[in-house]
Amino acid sequence: MIPGAFDYHSPRTLDEALSLLQKHAGEAKILAGGQSLIPAMRFRLAMPPILVDINRLDDLRYVEERGDHLAIGAMTREHALEDSQVVRSSYPLLHDTARVIADPLVRNQATVGGNIAHADPANDHPATMLAYHATVIAKGPSGERKIPIDDFFTGLFENAMKEDEILTEIRIPKPGANSGGAYTKLERKVGDYAISAAAVQLRLDGGTIAEARIGLTNVSAVPMRARAAEAELLGKSVSDAVIEAAGKAAAGECDPSPDLRGTIEYKRDMTRVMVKRSIHKAIARAKGGN
Amino acid sequence: MSNHEITLTINGETVTRTVEARTLLVHFIREDLSLTGTHIGCDTTSCGACTVLVDGKPVKSCTMFAVQAEGADIETIESLAAGGSLHPLQEGFWEKHGLQCGYCTPGMIMSAKGFLAEHPNPTEDEIRHGISGNLCRCTGYNKIVEAIQYAAEKLQSAEAGGE
Image 1 (cartoon, rainbow over the protein chains, first blue to last red):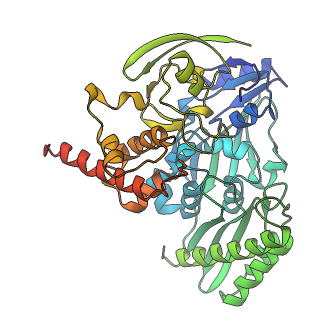
Image 2 (cartoon, one colour; image 1 turned 120 degrees about the vertical axis):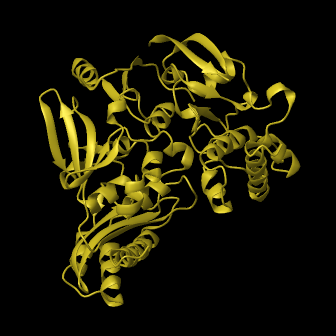
Image 3 (spheres, rainbow over the protein chains, first blue to last red; image 1 turned 90 degrees about the vertical axis):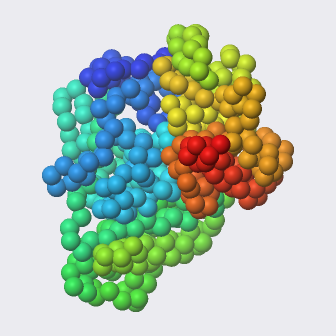
């Protein structure tokens, strides 16, 4: 399968990329890792007349703690997240996620920025970034904007960025003491999208759940937070009953579509299970375990 | 439509060609360079039969445009048997029966080569995680894992001067 014809540009600087987007407004599409876009182009589901390939923007590849957050350059490959020492030691939810995105070959090309900007509810980073309360940095001709992740996903494959903006960085707040997180994904096979998956990030205060954010993968048309499930946890003492209640709340508030991966009932129940498993693991990690 | 002149290194040889922007790397390798060892399996970024090394990293050459490989160093299965003697990975697949029909094998071996460069002394779990982007419909993977273990040991002992 051969993609439709297009004009190709490979800018060497962010400014050059931004001016190409401005010049070709409405026609240009950004090519990041290409692991979603190129298959879509081969199926002719996407036929952009102009591609702006930002793979030469090496300045957008970094993963490091800066001040109160972890800064991830948009062109960071998933593989680099999986291997990053700071991610492994301090951001277990992100590390869990990086290990189960697509497959190792795809992770060598796929980028964190692309995964998020694509705004596919079946992608794994949206749920994780929702759970982390991340901030997306978008640069455009008039400067830089900070977009809270809760405002970022506006529809199926739609995000809050303008056509002439480029996602340059994702910022994850440093988790405080007694925090823990986990990502649990049910998939038919490596490389498939999730049947359901749950990202949980929480903070304990003694035996009480002081903060909790939950993101869900592939059980809604737009990447979603499980707010009812979060409400079941907040201010409660940790117990199996509380965790079960949160799982049930998530099963109730998600909105999956039936497909080859299962019926609505099955996906709701698996969402309950994924949420529970992630909460258990997040609590264990908040207490210092693995 | 746009055409682009690209220069890249493939299996140690520098080549310059003009390609249409939409030409996929795998088609460039197979059709423009006549290196047909790299296979096309699924055409949907699923199977890994088209795996090649780009600057040392295994990637699916069906999911990258040839024009993006400008300046890159690419290795395909044809680069492995230097001087006619089998690479330890090829030898491992031979000795441990790591293939039946052989269709996935070039991709599997290139994936394993990239993996072993980063994990010279892998556990079985690490090998299984490392090759999980490559599908094999024949072997059930056990023999492939053994073949990669064979190669890892052989490469390690060569490293230690034990050849």
